[in-house]
Amino acid sequence: MASRWGLRAVVAAYLGALLLLPVVYVFYTTFQHGLGPVWDSVTTPAAQSAFWLTLELAAIAVPLNTIFGVAMAMALVRRRWRGKALVEAIIDLPFAVSPVIIGLALLLTFGREGWLHLPFQVIFALPGMVLATIFVSLPFVVREVAPVLREVGDDQEQAAATLGASRWQAFWRITLPSIRWGIAYGVILSTARAIGEFGAVSVVSGDIAGRTETLTLLVQKRFGNFDLPGAYAASALLAVIALATLLTMTTTRRRTP
Amino acid sequence: MINVSDVSKRFGDFTALGGVSLEIPDGSLTALLGPSGSGKSTLLRIIAGLERPDAGRVCIAGADVTNVAPQQRGIGFVFQHYAAFKHMTVRDNVGFGLSIRRRPKTEIATKVDELLEVVGLQGYAERMPSQLSGGQRQRMALARALAVEPSVLLLDEPFGALDAKVRAELRAWLRRLHDEVHVTTVLVTHDQEEAMEIADHVAVMDHGSIEQVGAPRDLYDRPANAFVMGFLGPVTRVGGALVRPHDLVLSPEPSDGAREAQVARVTHLGFEVRVALWLPEGEEVSVQLTRAEADQLELSAGDIVYVRSEPGEPAAVSASSSSPGPPRASPPGPAASRRRGRPG
Image (cartoon, rainbow over all chains, first blue to last red; front, side, top):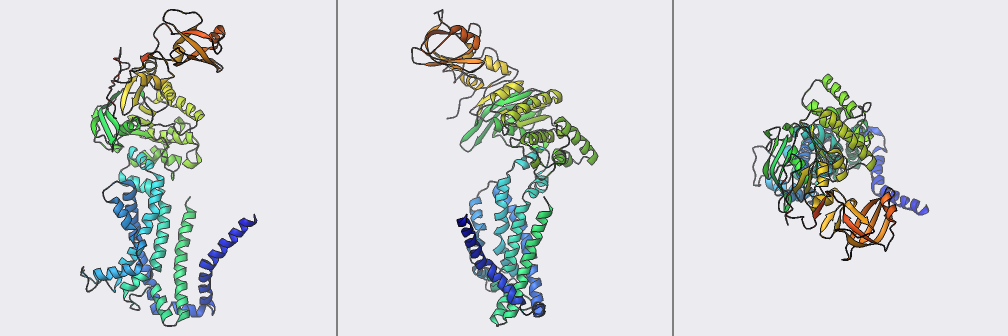
């Protein structure tokens, strides 16, 4: 009994010191002089623009990654094709490679000196930041959905086929409902990663206040300018977005059985 | 009628089916019986269109469906592990095929209620599959398959995941259902008792080929070879022949064609008595007696007895006949069977 409680205390202390304490401290420092200064700090034009840009990036990257992730998971789990093992390894690349390197790779590919020239500006503009965000958050949906698909098996899909359902009907009516929690977790993780991304986006954004500055970049800039209260306020805003995503997902989960 | 001709299927190096031909008459209940790996499930899945044969043809009701998708074959399929749509109520599960066919809601509701009554699940319509027992889930799956009025009902080890008592109940129930509905049914099973109990025809399979097809009784009494004989019931070896233990007769006195043997063990199993004998050559023979016969002989270990096959026409095949197999006196049943050399 005693040893079990001892173990629990160690785990709680470890998690508390590592995860909870710093986050709580950020909130504490942010609000120690009341709500007013914080509100002013997060409603400056630069902060507002950063807030919306961050949401915009997530709103583009997460749906694209979700569609790609589900399609890829289906292809990896349900089909046999040449080069599958290679693709499986490549999907994890964003986990393996540092985001800064991803940013540099995009810069080399799409930049002014790069080898791929598109008719619109990619680097130091929205398209480059979208690419960077998609890149770093790419594996989450695939990695969450694939095991669920494997676990569910294809019995239900085959049963649907024998009952007359086309592939598409079977996917919408049978497969999708049975993998929805895998997708939901993938979306939560992708969103968290997308709004929290710093390294890759920082390389390709150019950090133009009011245009290509995301919340994480704003935090970094304010911190660099010794505007600590401002940095804390922006961090708190980031944390609020993350918590809101988490809450939305868990409440939708509770509503459907 | 289902007509399978010369169907082969390989999975990599493994030959699942090596040129199988089979005719399944309209309205019959046919069992594909064999040990695991004999190719019986593969054959069923090829009939359903869930698997494509490497060679050969499948016809259902006269139409060649070899290249037809399962959606268009007019079949109902029941899986061993139910394949219930877990996120749908029992009602939506059973009505799925009709809703895919865009039937009016009222028609679907009526049909579903009707089927739930047939399978004895009335009152369960609004439950989720997770709230049903295994037997109930399988009955729901059966109702779901029957809802689209298939011309052929295919069952892949439908009772394999259920416990013995439920399995026996569902077997009897399926036989009654078939007598009412008369849909051509093919059932895959590895349980010879199940096949013998409910099927009109049994196709015994081994190593990707059909060993024999016939009525259960014919197969039991006139097995084509040692494999069929051994798979359908207990066998024992006397001299060079395989005999059913209940077809052997013991007597205390020597007689024509009887062999001398020594009693090794006598086991009383209530309604029957099993006697293990040693032949002079050192072979062990198992004999099954009724209690009355055993009481009369008053056997005990060490006694000398004389053993012979029962006069008449007992099932017996030469023990070495497993390949290529003796010519059959009369082809049992209307279906054709074909023996092929075994792979490996």
